[in-house]
Length: 259
Image (cartoon, rainbow, N blue to C red; front, side, top):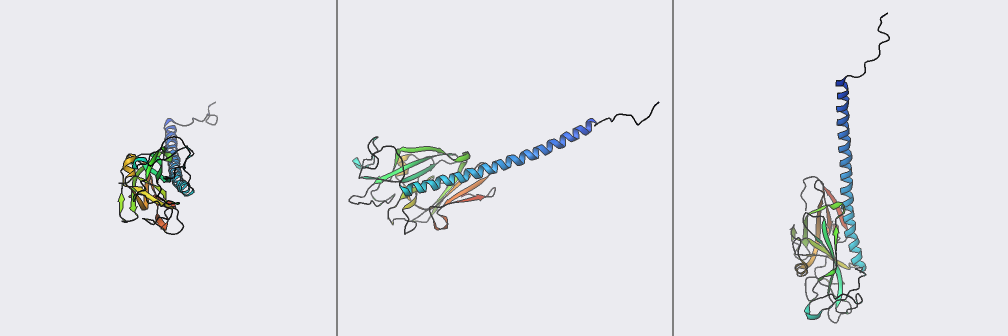
């Protein structure tokens, strides 16, 4: 006896299965793109904030006079600063540690953090430091130059520097800036009062050698450092809002100019 009540269901057709697979694939791609985009944004934000923290930590180290535990001496013989290996750090009365310099390279995540020394003013119990002027002779200490990488391998895409004396701003020209003890010097000081360090820079291009940096150090009023992962960009501003020593993080819209 024939009848339709006991027939088994036929299931999905090939076309129906293909439609389900296509829709599932599109949904997977959308979800994966969203997750990857969110991860990229999180990584970029973490890298920018970590770099800002490294700069802020360097400000505090220079303020506290923390440079290195490596035994190092300094000599001013022959009119130039030299740094013989050995001896007790800080015992040479002719020299004084000035600060630290960030030395960046354009379109690269790599940079060098260098310690800086200078001549102590003759006859001064407390030296007067005036980077780029007088007989201080700011000099990079080769043994205290350490290669670093910007967190998340972010690239430096530009830097702008506003000079403290001329107030002129130069963009994508100077790639070296840092902090030095001012010890009461008023030459180019950004602020009077209780500030113990000054924002400095070198009028040397990207990848400049030590001697070129040493010869062109001056005071900066503000510095802007531009960072990018190729798709996103942000800038770190020093010297904004009346302070040299706070790092202001500013995220930029795609395509926005920086600096």
